Image 1 (tube, one colour):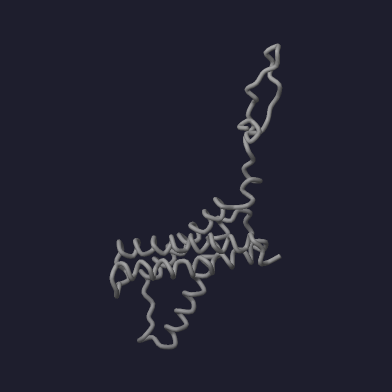
Image 2 (cartoon, rainbow, N blue to C red):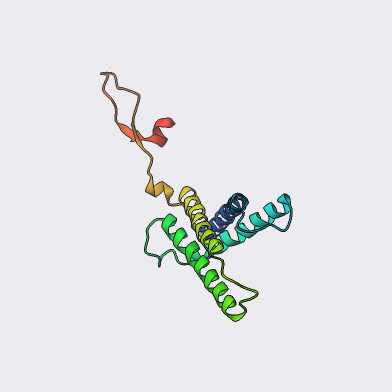
Length: 168
């Protein structure tokens, strides 16, 4: 079932991770100064967060659609592969525009490198959030086994149980 509750949940998670990435990329760009800002701080922060959530949802959607096809088992390397692939498609589109109208669109190597690093960061944000909020996380990391604290009349332990039963 393609549009299951899991799919919707992961789109929300990837949108939130993308918004966080947008704020992160705003901070990186403020520190590096590679791209010039045209507006004030609050306006740019909102725009970067909204655009980051759009990129996050797009990357998360491609990740959910291609999760069975990609060669890795964990979502972290899959998300990095998807976000870098999307960046590559956008970069090739920019190169095509540069070839058609070179005085308007031109290649800047520093911007290209920063875009590549930020796409890796987006994949990291989405991959880590998918791993942290994963529904399969309980299967990957089962509850630890603790001994029961109670003893029988002879002072012998009654047995072992999982952490959920021992806490109750």
